[in-house]
Length: 291
Ligand code: CP
Image (cartoon, rainbow, N blue to C red; front, side):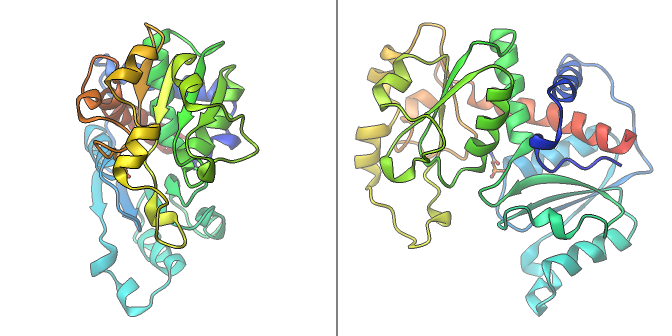
């Protein structure tokens, strides 16, 4: 069984193999069926894309799937996160997909569970399958990675997508810059003014402001203020390179970081990213089951 915890543990060669396999699924290659295998999807934080695309991937691979609701589980009777995962593992499931608000939650589980753990997002740490589907989308668009410039714009500090993408995109030969409000920037990443980020990048990756991770529960911007200063709109689209694309891990907030009409506009690959999420997750589940 092979866990998928963070892309930092995986060689670029293996990442390319996962992307190739995901691409072959997207082209209709019939996947091996795992009718005798069971998947458990444990989402301790809300999710639509990651949770349900893992579910679809598991169904396409012929697996049986257990879903889980924290609200109706014994977490409500003070059972711990660790014990909850141990319970599900003791049932003999083969893979456990986990999303949790704690960074590197998986470290406490390693050596204590038999199932392969697939990380569906840990706090502000990593979101490996999101980055893989982002890479798949970029490769489909540009044929590779070397020399491309990606601007990640928005709430960088609280974004596990930004953190994972910065590391892996740099490793694959891309130039990655960040932009957006100063209060969300991280000094370890190159930061450029918003207009420069939009005008000089091949990929403009927008992020939602992650209010749920702001310790004071407040934001310094109204929605309109944010949109006026940092939102992608029809005027700013005109500043982009002709071939440049817009990406967003979603959920997106229409009228805040992205104007309504841009979400499904011709430069947007947002729904393509979501479709690719199923194929990438099929590839990482197959990798986990085949070891
Ligand atoms: N991109 C992403 O992780 O979306 P969800 O939170 O809906 O899973």
